Length: 222
Image 1 (tube, rainbow, N blue to C red):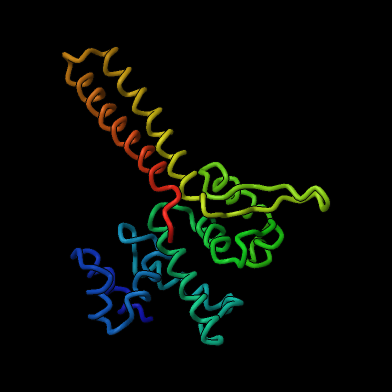
Image 2: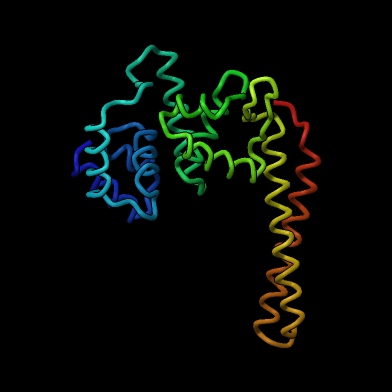
C-alpha cells in the first residue's frame, strides 16, 4: 500500500466514511482497510505517514510465520485471525492481549501453555504473562494447573463470554453504587448531586439487566 493510499484512507476516515466505502474508492477488500486502520491507531488516531513508516519497519523485520500466501486453509485461518485481532483492538483491548485471546480461541481445543503461546506468537514470556493476567482478571480465559508437569494451562471455553459479562456488569454495578451514594451526599437539590445520582441509577439498571440477560442466555445453543 502506498503513502497516497494511506492518505486517502485518512481522508475517508475524516469524512466519516465507512471502511467499505473507503475500500471501494481504493479498489481494495474491506478487510484490508479495517486491518490497516486497526493496526495503526484505529479510526480516531490513524496517521498515514506514521502508518507508512510502521509498514516499512514490519517489512524490514520479515514476513510472519503464518503467511497469507500459504495453503488455502492456512490462508483462511490467517485472515480470520487478523480480522479478529483487529476487531478486539478496535473494542479497546491492547494488541498483545488481543493476539493471545484470539490465539486461544483459534487453537484446536482452546488450551495452551504460556510456552506454547510464546512460541506461536513469537513474543517473550513476559508479554504472555502480562496478557494472560489481564484476560484472567476479566474472565475471558481461566487458568488450570498441571500438577505433573508443574505448569499453568490457559483455557478458553464456552462459558468465557458469560463470565466476562458478569464480571464487567458487577464492576459497573459497584461504580453505580458509588455514584448514587455520592449524589445523595452532595444533595439531590444540587446540579452535581442530581447528575451523579441520575448517572448511578442508569448504570445500576443497565448492570442489573446485563446480569439477568447473561443468566437467561448462558446456555444458548450455537
